[in-house]
Structure formats: C-alpha cells, structure tokens
Image 1 (tube, helix red, strand yellow):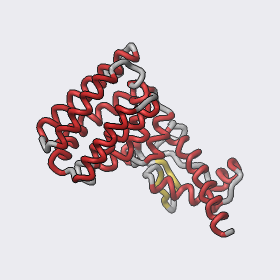
Image 2 (image 1 turned 90 degrees about the vertical axis):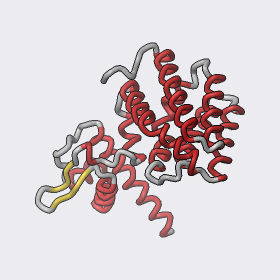
Image 3 (image 1 turned 90 degrees about the horizontal axis):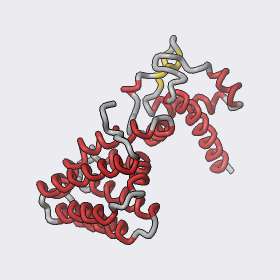
Length: 241
C-alpha cells in the first residue's frame, strides 16, 4: 500500500511539474518573473502544498526556477536551463516550429558527430563495435518507416557512446527525443539505399579504427541528410535564422 501511494504521489507532482514547466518554456512565465504563489497553484490545480513543493523542487533540478527567501520562486534565464534534460527538451520541441528545430539539431550534429565518430574509431570497445553493427543491420532489415527510424536513432546513439567520452553521452541520450522528428521526415524520402551505404561506411571506418575516414564519412552522411530534408520539405530550414 505504501509503495502504491508513493507512486501515485510521484505521478501527481510530475504532472504539476509538467504543467508549470510547459508554461515556462512557452514564455507564459518569462525569465525573472515569479511563479504564482503555492496557494494559487494549489487552488488552480487542486493539489496539496506537498505536491506543489515537490514539483518546484523538480523544476529547480532542471534549472528552470530558483527559490529565494525574500523574492519567492522565479524563472531563471533560458541559458541557465538544463537544455539536455529530457523534459526540457520535450517541452521545447512541443512549442517550437519544425524548421527552427531542424536547424538547431543539425547545428549540433555538424559540430559534434564527426568528432564523436573519429573518437569512436580509436576508443570503441568490441561491444561498441558489435552494437553499432547490430543497429546498422536493423536499419537494413527494417520493414516499416517506424522500424527504420528506431534503428537509425539507435545507430547514432551507439556512435556517440562508442566515443568512450562521457561528455558525449548526454547527446546520445537526448537523441531519442530530438532526432525522432527529423529522422521521421527523412524516412519519407527515396534515398534509403544511399543512406545504407553512408551508414555502412561510417560503421566500417569505426570498426577499422580509421579516425580520419570515420570523420569524413560522417560529414558526408550529415551533408546529404540535410540536403534530403530540404528536398522533402520543399524549403530550406537551414537558411540563416
């Protein structure tokens, strides 16, 4: 009974944190502005003060708010938010336009992924190489767009993890959220045979421990992927924002 009650309490405070977090990310409570009082939140959402306080602690841990004795709980500047937190990512993706989202994702990938691949070529373990190959094989075996997208995401996550640099790993973890939409769009194109070749080249370069080849192959893959999205969407989301 105790465990069941604790689970219910966690679910409620998570729901409250979700409501408030989404308001903050949408800009309805701007950086520097205070949150409504605990009493107001309790009345509005019909929850207890304990639930509200736990929700605020959750948002504090994500970097969205800070509490001070004399000024209450206020929204922190956007640059201080934990941008890699899965909930912060989800709230932002739910409230941003697709083109802006795609452009930012590719900026990150172009900056980080070739280097991660080069590191993986020299640092990957036998398990890393095996899992990367399994992800590639799953891409080839996919019989639906959903299966292909899932395998594609798994491939790129394994690439970052194979770098054996723990500072790259949070990027791998965020891909389940951030890459799904761009990969879903890309899967609609007719370029899959070429994508197989590009991913195989990246994989084989890593397996061969050839860092320069892995870096170059990843740059080619990313360049063609961005071109594919421009063609599929009928406009260029990568023009200067």
